Image (tube, rainbow, N blue to C red; front, side, top):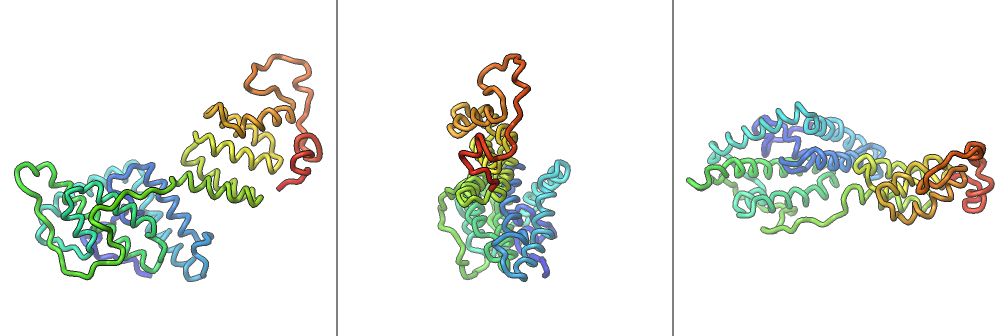
Length: 315
């Protein structure tokens, strides 16, 4: 499949990596990483979203040829600095050539006219991002639409320093039929769960179904984004507990309590794990005792903590 795009910034022989990931041009590395993980999960061949063989292949091509290179460019220290500098220069150049710039989408025309540039631009980007890769066949058109928004935003941003002396030149627009995914003149910022909250919600659903390995993967991904999320530590500790992995459960319950001393799940289960492992609870100072090192953790799963609670079976 050809990935040629001839609208927006792509029209000027520039690869618009922000449009590929559908993030604002001033997005920070953390925001870019969150977005990349969401898009990569959607496009990966093992994703349930891409069920047919043709969709798996197309999704993998989009991931390897567009999405992965975009993430590498925007998150590398040196490449990101160079890329942002080029973006700034393009904005200034397009401002000088504004009479020759044409816009084809209704949304880009609205952005060129709206007085509330920042709000409209970022709301539009967020809204498009919700469904950017829902239809893989339409992905390039959506990327082109986002790139037109980036083009207009860069032009108008470049005009701000001279706004006091002259009004910014407006790009020429073509008469086209409005697209179905255009937004109202004043779109409200979307209210949706954060990426980490989505991971936690999926993990909780998997835990409820006793699908512990899958739940662990979701929570590990969440902790990569927010390593100090006490709820994530507490949940993954329960997953390890259900799998009779006491030492790992203890580690994450300890982390949960360090981050949130009032975590109810950790407060309930950590003392039981400590007893099963023959250790003193960590909220008391451990004193030297000749008997402390004599106890061995119960690894059989057939008695003690797990014999009564989980039937001695690993889930």
